[in-house]
Image (cartoon, rainbow, N blue to C red; front, side, top):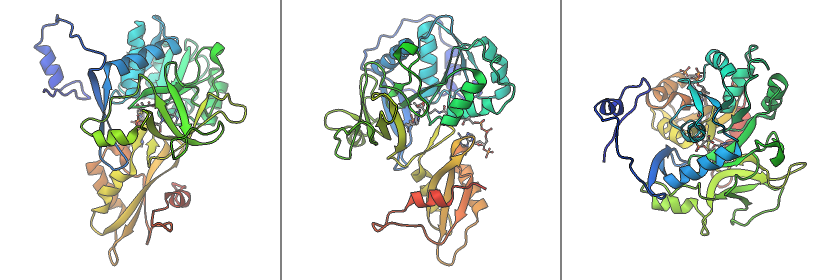
Length: 386
Ligand code: MCA
Ligand code: AMP
């Protein structure tokens, strides 16, 4: 009906329209099932999907997290996350708003600024890269976070090394949780010690009111300690993809469980049976510095570049971003391709974080007997970014 824009510099038609509006207005009432937001998330086919979140979805997750993480009116949140994702937009802000707490907003992660404001804060949320960067700065000490009560990490796997180094340096234990745009938060390590320990390498039990299961390819639950597909059910789960009924149907089981596309395991050696660990993904997805990159989207752009026969985009380990994007390109017979030109071409059309940090040119992609590209082979072969 109406499209208003908000730019990173604070301008845009939303701000212009707001300037002409009366500051007093009648509260607009909405029903729990009304649409509150459509969050666009990329997909394995390279085509974006709009996840429809209702007011009931947002409320359920926000109220659960307020209690589960013990939000208080005297909390001060250090907010440095982008607000075009669920993490910064809802998980961080809603907790503070519901508790009547304060927030200090920074335009982005800047370690100098973070260290400047930390002593005034009690709570911080970040993707693992935030913690890696804080730890890389010798000024990040116990004294710097003396006022803090909680550090939360999510959006990508937090390495056990980072978890332990943080404990040693800050004297505090990062709380890791797991979620998705389509569902908000799904599981969380406990905040209250009475509920259990925060265990590195796990994302904790399902949040109150939600159910998580791990299943085989036939959607049948499997034994504790075995990896399988993670599925979730609860009041937090979205209402479907905007104008994509078929895609929506595919992502739910017949009995209403949402397929996350993540591979997980409940329990394991020395781990309580209700704790989930994320051990992989069944979707072809790279998570770089907390941003999702679907290889297909980049492959589609590379494949139509001059001289290119085909390509495969993979994620490889990266010390700062967790995973980094790498492309492997096969030239057409008799043609030659220039990695720098491919990179420049991608830069002009894709968000910067999607542009491969490295491009390899090879004669043929490794394929299995079914003709499917063996990305695991490529990931091993090109693991080294140097
Ligand atoms: C920036 N670059 C990146 C990334 N960010 N490359 C790969 N991965 C990235 N994440 C590019 C820059 O464009 C630049 O390229 C070069 O890398 C170095 O940039 P740098 O200055 O280091 O980057 P930065 O501006 O400091 O950003 C890094 C960042 C940022 C702060 C970690 O990526 C970030 O804020 N990530 C958080 C994302 C997030 O909130 N995800 C939540 C979504 P060049 O040199 O070519 O210009 S997931 C979610 O919401 C679900 C519900 C959940 O579970 O939370
Ligand atoms: P998005 O689609 O941007 O909402 O990203 C959701 C995806 O991020 C999930 O499906 C997981 O693959 C990943 N994710 C979120 N939190 C974690 C975590 N703590 N550990 C591992 N992966 C995570």
